Length: 52
Image (tube, rainbow, N blue to C red):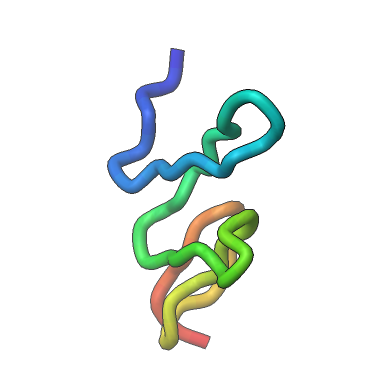
């Protein structure tokens, strides 16, 4: 069983919440239902890595 990520967040959905795995160097977008990589990082295999 995978451990819950350090920065995991929940999003309300009906009667409960849905966990969003938030990788390091990422943030939740305004509607708080998706994430994007921080400035200077790019998405690679589900992770935010440094560089363009």
